[in-house]
Amino acid sequence: MLAGQHLVNIVINGTFKIVFNKQRVSYKGISSLYVRVKIGEQKKELPLRIRWAVNKFDQENGLCRQRFPEDQEAIDNNMIIRTQIGKINELFKYYRLSDIPVTMTRFLYDYHHDFPRKDFIAYMEAQITARYKDRDISDPTRVNHLKAVGKLKSCYGELPFAAFDENWGRNFDNYLKKNMTTKLADNVNGRWAIHKCIKTYIRIAQKDGIHFINPYDFFRIRPGKGSWQAIFEHDFRKLYKYYHNPEIPSIRKKVLRGFIFSCMTGLRISDLARVDKSWIEKNILIFIPYKGRKKNKRLEIPINKVAREMIREALRDHPDGRRLFYDTEEQTANRILKEIGGHLNIKTNLHWHVGRHTFITMLYNKTKDLLAAQHFAGHENISATMVYTHQDRKELVKKMKPMDDII
Image (tube, rainbow, N blue to C red; front, side, top):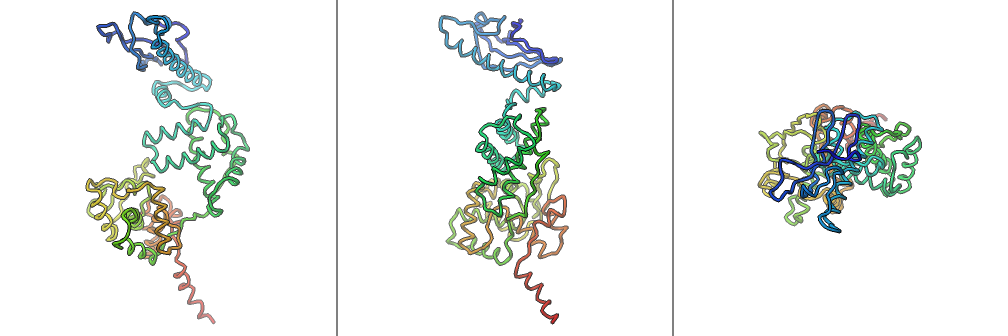
């Protein structure tokens, strides 16, 4: 069975054509249609999800013949066939012009993910979807990355890869400065986070063989000091007392339970959302942090008294032992934490990540052991741990008191 020359394409060592399965023709003479792709010595048949009568299939042109005048099903099927042929043609053209060595594995990945190759915003959006589907990024990360896509869309609408040049990073940063709604103190970190996200997908696009100028070779932005501050023991006790208030609303209690557990273990939201009963072994929390999953680094955190209490109460709401501390979507939970902070007159702006700051700070202030804080935080570099250690102003005043004795 041979297809017409206009449906056979050469790309280094690859061809494709429309075929039907000779071995699976029904008693009514109907069979499924496929695109048969051959790259090197490897063959793959990609289903078109079309079934058609074999005697009404144009083998020379790889199309469905009409069974009667104005046969709409035949017209629709041929539209599907031409769309898939166009898609494969575009991929093969891209490989040829980019001088990319083609393998069946590479072709199948690109075919099924269908990444746009001209517009960066469309490419980034498709990659986010694929990475989330492949569990390469968590849902909170996916949401944050899509926010960066939103900023690009609001600025450009469309952004061809060819639009990247030496001035792009600076120009886009100026747009963010004028249009971001975050507080002034958070502005530089908010912009940095968006640039960091975009840089990630620029690197992915470059590895994917797309040729363009990397604007971040000419523009850099550094984060400022983080705005998230730890809460100290007196405020933590307020939260713990409020948690046990019998009049606390159920939704607040569940959110606060997760936050208190984070304050006692240092878990990030990406790990807090996954806490499972199977992680607990002899009062030790044993897991692979989501952020460090590619290194397969296991973390072991002893479960202290308060953390054990939170686990016991979470198990009452989750008897299956799964997702013990993720009762509420992150954005909603952060809003509830702010409400709790306001209700208790806590000056610190409560947010999920404050729990991690609080754990590392309280652990260091209690033990003065920076290495232990580094270990339980899962940091590779101790300088990362030092960013999380905060000093209570009341304690700083006490430490300065001896200076009064000089005179």
